[in-house]
Length: 453
Image 1 (cartoon, rainbow, N blue to C red):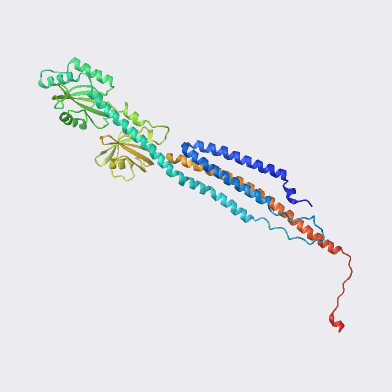
Image 2 (cartoon, rainbow, N blue to C red):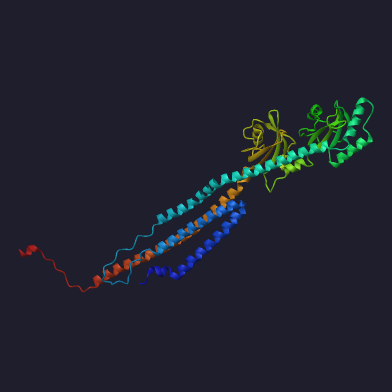
């Protein structure tokens, strides 16, 4: 009788099958794992680290498969029927392959998939949080610096308007009653400045705050701008108001410049109010988010009494319910409130004004009392890590399925070989019994020792 192992799985077919299985598994692993990791959008340093872990996982899985194949090939052969029929039967066939051990091994491999996914999340989540905070800090610091440069630029622009000494003399003459209105030259200088810098308006006031002339916007000056007149007169410096929202008008900031007759150190004869529309430059500057993001947003905030006043929220459509938003300053989870209470740069996970979990970082803007808060939704920030864990878990699951199929095939072959071995062993015993019963019958006698007494 031929060797059952060779009957059920010829060596040539076995070699081709093993080589084909290895080639298919290795090719799928390389293609799917590489494309999956690249599609996540992770930084290059993290991809390189994951490539190492992916290679180690591949080595571990293929080593396990190689171990199973070698163990099968080194199993003791079943009893052979080619021995002499008169020889006593050898020991019976080995025990049947255990299905329980196979089930336990497959269950271990299946449980390995969520364990690997959990391990990836545990290791990658802190790294992703650190990277997100680093990006948000960079955005908040850069935009805070840009806002401060814009503010300083508006002060410098207003302080450098030409022909303002002529306007100052006209205002002084009007104050003494020697002149009724600004001269044509002064009006022309104001109009040129308004046009050159795309101002929403220009207003000239005397030292008592009475309006001398107005160009552009017709809405009244807010109280906070009027409160700057005495400070500007006393310090002879150009000052800016806070950001404010006129009724049915774009958001604005006013810059107050004292008008002096002969330059610095001279008496103040009046004030020039330059009115800047924030929608022309400042808000678009704050709107811009580097890269693509669905939840990335920058907020410009300040303290107003016991409240957080949102001077600006980025232009996501769902965030434009009202020009102003006020929330409690003592809110324990609102990043903007935490930022204003701290007064310095920082970072924190919390709930934004919509109640959405976010990562946030912030930076103060000069000495204005304004704070620039950059934030991103937690779900979006952690999406790359979740995608990576999902992809790797999927690859692991495919690998487990492939290993399970190979192990089931080997187990079926072992079962088949065991059945053949059992049949050979049974045939040997049956052959010996038939030979025994086929011997010539010589007779049988029974004798008792008592008969010889």
